[in-house]
Image (cartoon, rainbow, N blue to C red):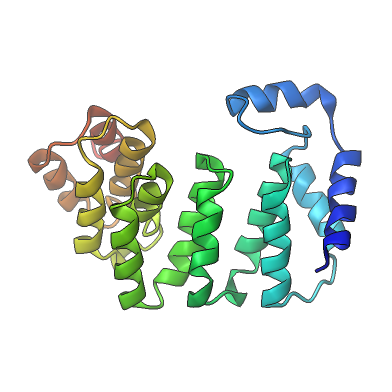
Length: 222
């Protein structure tokens, strides 16, 4: 995809903006991003009309997502994530550094979680060596979004969760006062409790985790 093609797509989004919704959407995200006031169903409808019958290639996906992340509008970031998740089968292990850059740019929970759970997690499960190397690096990072990615990438693995690796990511983050990390710890444990409830109960009883993490982890076990 050429830059000029993306610019026409971005312009279509601008033409479909709703000024009445902008203030509310920007306030919800603490005014970190510029919005057009386009809701999720409206965004997906636009994408469907734009890319009807599109035959995607890996290069097209990477180009489009990269252009989306460079946009000043949050809805275009979401659009990039929409396409990335839908076309994730095109991506390879070698694209993980690209996904890591997306985590680090325009970072907030709404895009980071989608990248971690629905993109990075699906690729990492294919190669244990790469998974261990990258997740260890992220868990040791000073960047909270990479650390959150390390915790959450296994969220949908169910019984395939690498418990040793999960415990490493949780131990690296516990004791923090960072809300987004404590929330991630609880979320990961809560999801794993659907497969291994006794493990999660025991983990919460034997590990010093924040009240927020504990409350989230045991939410459906009490």
